[in-house]
Length: 186
Image 1 (cartoon, helix red, strand yellow):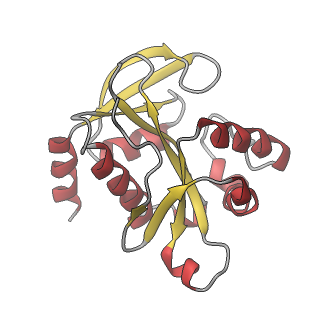
Image 2 (cartoon, helix red, strand yellow):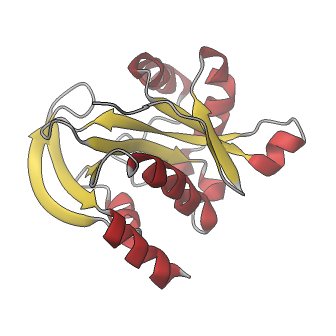
């Protein structure tokens, strides 16, 4: 597939760039509050030793992007507020998925997740007509967020999205459903 899995994406509030090994402390700071993982199937990722393993996995994929708060970047403080990644869809060749997204809980709601997904979807739609989101059945927060941006539940499958196969809710989003969701949000 001809797709750039590690682009640099720039928006008004945030930018995204490829994850680097030097980003550990900044990304861990964004992940270090228990509230950030509340409701997530891996609710203990706020613990450093658990996050170290997760960070190694993200770095090893070569497809993870960190989210940078543009306002914080200007003040040279810790500017990393979370991450997300593109990855090949396990059961649909020649398709792209977005996932492994988390934001520091201080950035929940409002424009942050919306802009992150906007940047990533606009990039993906240059190459594909449908983007997939894979969500754990217990992660109702992510399910609601997916629906809010125009994703529709399609089916449930046991997929190896990360390391171990697990039951996964498969949502798809198209340029038309994305545009309709954006129109209703404005």
